[in-house]
Picture 1 (tube, rainbow, N blue to C red):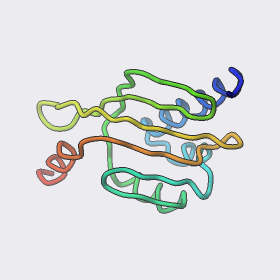
Picture 2 (picture 1 turned 180 degrees about the horizontal axis):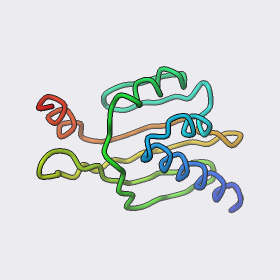
Picture 3 (picture 1 turned 30 degrees about the vertical axis):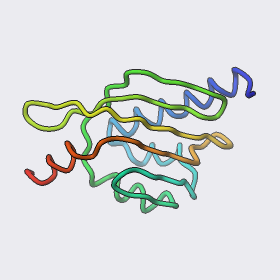
Length: 123
């Protein structure tokens, strides 16, 4: 089991990463992610930071509404909502990040992509 200090550090890294992404400050967000980050979601996967951020910069996601954060050592799980459409329809998202050496090395995202796909088609 990891120490509380490690858990706080991992949580701080992930929350600050989320905050920079919400501000669309991808240059700063990049500093929180390892070069060989593993990213998996229902709509894509990447194994390096540059293609992940190139994709992420063009997705234009709404701001995250964080509902709950769970920490277990270097693993941080964030439950948050994204609101798509008019009127906004909330989509519950679970993002599980693993932190190694002060950087996020793994991001696994789980959500039902239908609201996002529908919004992209109508744009």
